[in-house]
Length: 382
Image (cartoon, rainbow, N blue to C red):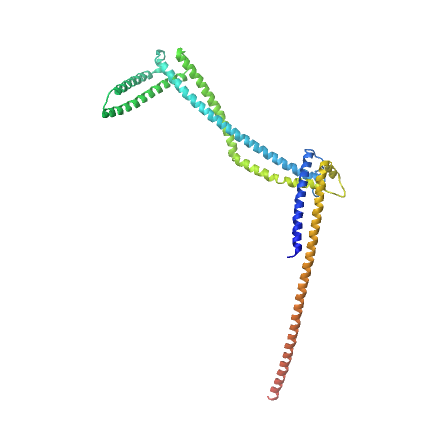
């Protein structure tokens, strides 16, 4: 293998290493300069005809990227706020529903207490209606069942007797529980009916206190219902937005990927700006002077090192080109030598071919002479 190829490979590796180091320096310099410029607009390329890369063009590209990143970040922030708001709304709905369930249960108990307090009062016999008779019937049944259970507990000392009585007791207990539940529903029905009416008569004593507590509970339940309605409306508004625009988590992920993709262009922007800052031109224009005005004394070391690396890169590139040229010359010479040998070979073939042609022509001439002699013989002897 040609040793010069190894030399080129080593030079390419060193050149690439120098290029990477120079690019890192220029990227850092370009980023620092862009941040120093900030929101100001010191260049006029927007209104002038410019060829090639210019500081104003690069700065505009940087600012466009920043605008896209900022806009995308705002969308993410809005989506995160709506997502958190939805979580808060759901938590609020859950809490309100639990509270309403508790208040409903408490109101049911108060309604039952109120109904029980109202039924014995003769002033409310119109309200009671048939409920009074139902109460009496249920109380009788409950009393009978309780008495029966008490008696059953005192009888039957044998196993079989105990087993039979135990089954009866279970049935009696179930029936007693159903009757007590029916009685409570009856009281609750009367109490709820009274609460829903516009009362013309005022209550006194414990019934008045129960009524006041029940009304307070109803008001609190109504407040819970109003708040639940508002929260559910807010939840619908947010979910409708999500329904139209898609899953917020998926959208946030997509936007974050886009931001990451956009940011990939920033190193190139910084490199171009840093390169323009150290660029040496024969005719330094006003734009270059303005860019140079942002360079500080602290940047001199970076610029000197970048220039030194540029020189080394150029030198190594020249050496590579010279070695390649030398290798190409040798390659062309080898090709020429190969072609010359091929020409000699073809010339030898031509010589052999010419000699063969001459032999063939001589044979043809002899054959034609013999033909002529034979034809003469035939004519003479015809």
